Length: 285
Image (cartoon, rainbow, N blue to C red; front, side, top):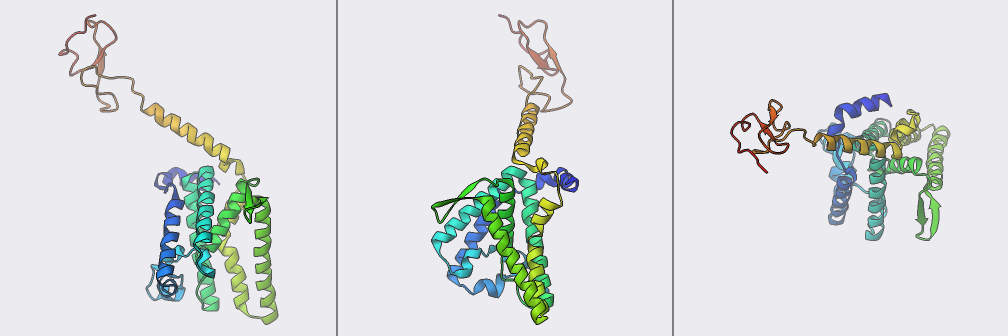
């Protein structure tokens, strides 16, 4: 946690605000590419580590445009629902943590997915077909950890708390890992173990943020709201000036070397910079 705090103090000003807006834009671009040519993504954009080693380094970035909905065929209705949910979850996490922490969480998820793809390549020799599937899963787990009592309508009818959905989701992923390990022991095929390890690595950003850091209150929504309010008040106070020339309107924020004086011959509290202190017309009431 201290390390993340140091990073935020040093690089926080570079954070991308409303990151999910740009991610969703990339998803939509991926959907357009899929509609035009369903095979173009696999041929030129997917996270194929073999092709990356051959010089196609753009794949380390372009693989993120593949929404998981497209895996089972494109349906505009479910695609729109998926985009709305991802955007809502991402914005909620950014509101809770702040832009820098959410950027770090998301970008570290991309990095760990690349590591998972490298593991699969060296052991299995295959490509990584998941896109951002595991990154979106880790976002869902983070959302459930922060807002456990938020309710979703399952099948648009049944209200279910998000923490219960997260338990079910975790059980499914745990079962997938168990199957990979079991099949690996049965067949002595290292590819199954590689798949299990890759799933864990792809979700490692969630593990780091929520198990390696223990002081959850520091990143709670209430704490982040207090921090945002404090920073707004500080920034507002910086815009309040103490001195202002009644003639030219300049303040100490225009030039820190400016000096201001009150005129004893003017009726009222009129302040002037040194340039206009002796040249202004005296105010008489």
